[in-house]
Length: 284
Image (cartoon, rainbow, N blue to C red; front, side, top):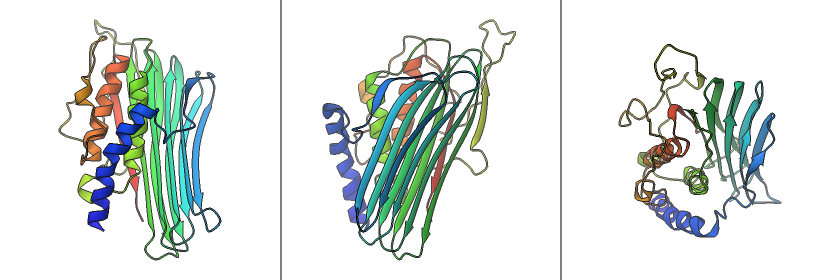
């Protein structure tokens, strides 16, 4: 089994490299055009059963959310037979120009009735402008019931950034996010798995408040689960990250390292500061 998982990890490099060339085929329904400034719901669902034993669904979208709005990203997968596979992946990027917004990110997987393999990954990025506030909730749940040898994995990753600039993500970073979601949904050895944020810290409130500081910016609280990362990831307005520094296609590579690299690229794109990076994982 370890050899199989290692082989799967090594295959990710080829898959991700092909995605850069082919436009991220794993996300055939990706829509990086702008959504309307209102409540936003983005859902991927992959439910495998004897009639449809192999199901995949992937969704990607960016939207602006108006004051008082609610952004929801959801990935859900299930398996109900031996040999069934269900893979769901959601990538949602939301921009908060003003006011207060609530952001929810959820990944759920459950397996029943046989040795199936199910995975759900939901990746939500929230970019807030000066003067706005965000209450962000992130959670993952995986359940196995009445099955022998079934696999159920759920991963929810939520990144909140603050910026003074009117910037959106580059096309390259959009592709990197899709690759990261694909990587997180691929079985890997435990040593390469993403480390979850400590239990009980999956709710973050990020308010950019008026202050007396000369630069007019509040110092946000940073919640990162990797002590190797700096206490704040701040980049100048014109910063860029060299292509070699963000290599989701590299294999074998730990999921943690891939996430850290993409988060740094996100901050460079918007010229901002990372407020929180929350990881919630679920296994039966």
